[in-house]
Length: 225
Image 1 (cartoon, one colour):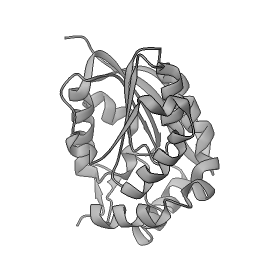
Image 2: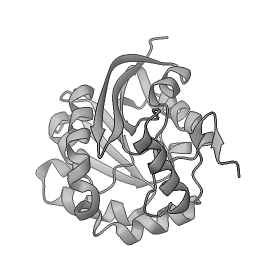
Image 3: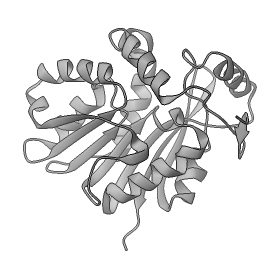
């Protein structure tokens, strides 16, 4: 397998290995990464600006923090769906949602975003936080094409992702990613360019920093036909 495609580092582990890794980590994930991801996740949710009664999908919902926040926003007349590759992570998400009344209007599904298990034009909004960069480089356009397919006309997409920039911290992170993929699993990607190439219209883009690494927080929309 080539190390890079179009300047983006490849993902060396298989989907089966990724699922097994997240299943093992699921009970401890919030202790390991939950705190460091929080402010970026919340900024992405702010940009998405979900309203009461909307239908929302989170791809890579993990342990359910964003699902709970989204369900509170859409209310009983809306619907939130969470998709994750790891059934262990979904178990943690369901446990968290069961403690909240808003969890009643959240459904969870185990699956792969390369082929989303939902009909076309099902959702008003879609959210991904530190998820898109987990997919191998050839799959990135496929995932975004699926996002286009399941969003309604004019639907919104908010993405939080490590950003590929010419920085020493990025190069070091990529070096560790290739050698320790179970521990350094995501890697920086050209988020803005990928969204534009997938046909999304950029609405707002913010660059933040986490541990010296640039993070893109982007809101885009599916253009009206």
